[in-house]
Image 1 (spheres, rainbow, N blue to C red):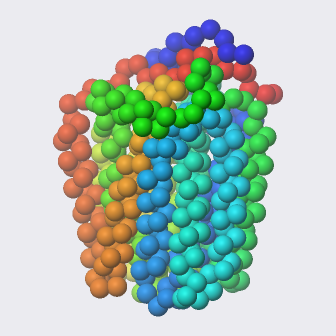
Image 2: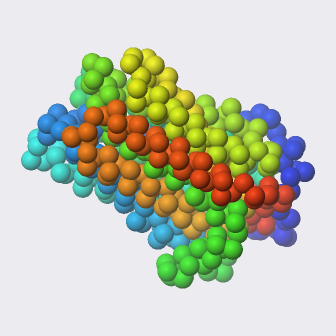
Length: 434
């Protein structure tokens, strides 16, 4: 049962955030959510890396691979306004379990992708998986603050933010190896097992994933709920700034469409593609860990976000002109060190400023803007990938991100640091299981 109202956490409390990550060992439910996200994110890369190598082999060009990436992000962008509302009105545990089960069924269709004629089935399967992710992502992000005590939230965000990076390293590198040694279809089988494991781990979580509210169980009025969250954002300059942060890196994400071409140009094949995605994930893993002190210093947040955007662009400008594959790998790491920091810093700030009853929708809006930017970038890169040298595609994407970072910082330079972030359901939660 919920207890009496609890005041929000102020900066004075944040100064005493535990320095270690013992929340992972102390909190069984958070540990289960983290483990579930690890296997789900790993499954995603066991699909994407083999497909990005398989489809050019089947079709003889890079367009289908670019379309797979664009379908993945585009469907997310279209559905997030609705799925964010669902995450605020329906039991989040149920959403996560059903989303993983639906993705499992979708993966089975990939076993039919065997020739140029059946290659479009990959778009159908990836699109269906993207629908599942559209429900999974805002529900998981919105649930996190309900599974940990407020003082543990910065550490929990850093750990949760590392899940994607960790499994991009593991999933992308192993996906490349397994695809090379066995076949892409072995990767798809691993994906199916991972998705079922994610559902099981989520089902074991006992702590409530959202605060009780009177609207639970009522039909979600999507337009009304979305307008409510947009009004909430529009009236708060800091929120407006925070929900536009991820778009900078998103607009540079067209570089991912040329990863297979970069690897092929260096004679690295599927293993090289996996290494590029793995270094991308390693950067996204380490970046949030190194940048964690920013989470407890509000005055550093906006400048830190601007620097992370700019460093992403600079890193990929280097990739565009790097003559050696090891240097390319190092620069990809640097770019995504910055990109991963950008993602976790903005997520933490949003969780601190948005009340629980709006959190799913605000996160959905945030992710929608980012995924629209990603889809536009990948479609644009895909449209020219067979006609323009990969070097200029990379340089163009990097320049867009760098320009965006400069403009964003100029537009937000007068915003003051938040002095009273509130972690936000304002209710005592049940104590974690021992």
